[in-house]
View 1 (tube, helix red, strand yellow):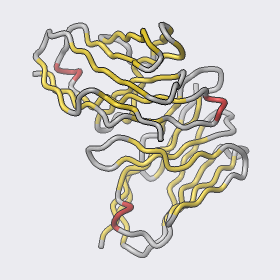
View 2 (cartoon, rainbow over the protein chains, first blue to last red):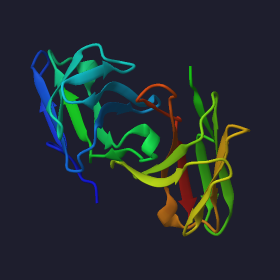
View 3 (cartoon, rainbow over the protein chains, first blue to last red):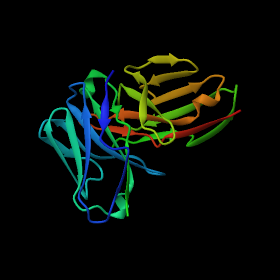
Length: 114
Length: 111
């Protein structure tokens, strides 16, 4: 079974702090994604990566950056956390889209910025 | 730009009843995915539909795909309380690595 592990389930940070959210997958997937989920707004793609050191902006990249130094690990960085970044963050991985593989999600990190 | 719409957004139904959730998408795709999300939890994959006419069933849930109509349905048969969750459909965006998600359908099955 594919396992996607996010380092924290719950996180509380202060405004202005630099925040790292870590995600590790164990299935050698090329693609990795970071989404945020907010009530009434559904899932919104922040960034995705299709290979080591390769990344592309999603729909809401402002205020975020990412790092993929190794294939299994994809990190989301909030350079200076703000209260409007309070959200549920979901990491996912997948094989190439044309393989028909679904996204495999981690358990999520609920981040609160105070 | 690919858009994915689900309806209804909310569904409250009695145990034992049947109902269908609809997922429409705006551009050509030959594959579609259904996910389930329990409250406070992450998403888990339910069905992978990879061609026109594909039908998958698990328990009381059955999903189908009509690529010509750009429509997928998730049919619930004889609903039970354990099916209460939010259900999402997702379509891969052609030429990109992105998946576009529907808004989700929050299902509540009343005992």
